[in-house]
Length: 280
Image (cartoon, rainbow, N blue to C red; front, side, top):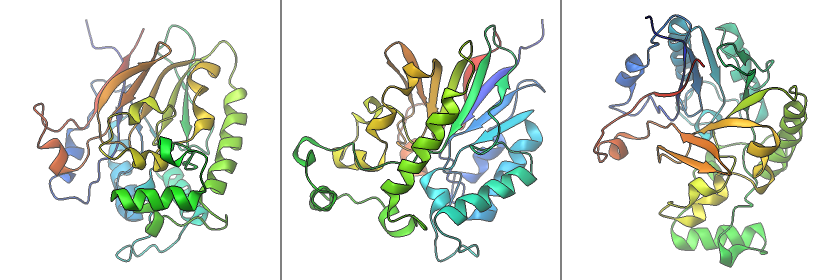
């Protein structure tokens, strides 16, 4: 009997880090009908991100990508100096040119599930609402002060532009409204795979060494999306803590490769791609 079509997922490939780029070649389908979900942080330079996605698209029947914070960084070494929403819009445009699906495209339906299964790529950012107990109810400035005092400030504060919005939280607010509307339009008889760079539920942040870092990891407003929108599973990255967890009986898959200094410490070594579903 031949192999059945499979849904694969990866994230946080960080291909510009020495030791990671070679693992792009490991990401290959088992059958010509396999799909690949890419949950962001392919890299920082726009051309590198697009070139990597194009290589993956040549191998898989369908590739679905969502941006991570690193794709949205504007670094001095990147010839593409777009920032904020214009940078995201340009990434979407270039992905469309190479046949990679994005959060701005029609949600695809994976054709190999017994019940209709919509893949929902989501770009929602974060709004700093995942606070430590001491930061709850304080101003954002105070929450950021406490994070700095603890020794942690996400690089987003320096490199992730938010033009034309007043801040990242306001950009997040718009993305949440748009995403929620689109999710609500999915037919009621469909299950979903929710694909996002940032986790949609807070529980995966529990093991963070610096709990203050959760501020840059998600938003309270998505905490029930896995239930409201009938998720069969949720796929995400960002945390560099690859594992399987559950919330309300729904499976959450963190599928990041991470940095070489991280995967070298793991007994199983680097895992560049995960199988998250096989045909029913």
